[in-house]
Length: 416
Image 1 (tube, helix red, strand yellow):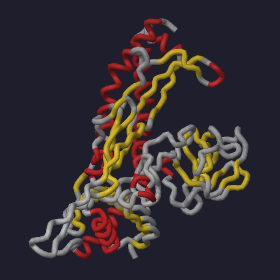
Image 2 (tube, rainbow, N blue to C red):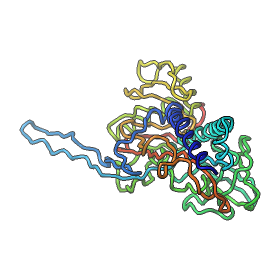
Image 3 (spheres, rainbow, N blue to C red):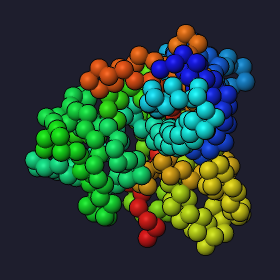
């Protein structure tokens, strides 16, 4: 490989692709991502530090007679938290002959640009999808929950699996969900085929690693991603899960309001849980998030009744990023923007308070830079073969300042 070709390839990556990559990520981010607007404030190195409230300030006091003293109000309880960012990345590999050829002709430079452009398009789309998935995840990296599979290559999946995350060729691990330990023949497998038939969702792993046996205690994750992703809403909006080192059971105000097995979607169920959460926390939510189908179904309910809150008619949907829509609704006197996000499980509807939840990131999406280089030589691939790679990386983390201001309806089904 000629030194000139290497330098030219690195320069092409810098000049032609990095600015466009940042622009596309910012413009085409998933709907919830756009609403929360990631920022770098309070991020040091790859760690986020912030204050969180585990007890509400109790400033309301009373007295029986005018001459009696007002009782002392109880101050709110805050703690300082620290959380490492997750890492989302994509890798491109280059043939050393192609790099060398760049220095010989304009035509070969064009081929390099075209190849890189095609590869980056795929990486950016996958990265955007991963951002959306992790925003609703649990940090453990769970993509699918397994069904019952007995000694075969075709792995049965939970019926509610979002199959858009299953990409043929993707490297996965099949792990015990509670521990992250790979099951027998479950490490570093490739997805060879995907079955999308409703009621029998499955994926087939490559034949090189042997057959597998699974059940509902097991999960499928990206290879080596266990406990390395961003903390998402499935952990944050919970009344049982411990996050950020806080023991949820010991902090009565560090619990979201959760309704399990909700059943058929109705206006009343949304209102009831919103009111319950507001009574417990003292505040209402201003963002409601569901799968786009639930948003559509709810808007049709609103169209039928013409009212969500007393004498309040629904507004027309407004366009949001990535082609999705939002509806403004009023819940117990509090206006909220209801957004449809395809990454949200179809059975979940989340109520979020924007001031209490945020995405922090180390910086914008960028190429890995080692000693000023983003085309990285001498990185060894399979079998110790030297390869040339460039890595697109992003370090985000979702944080929660106050958990009990949020709620979730679980197990929501189609309107009766």
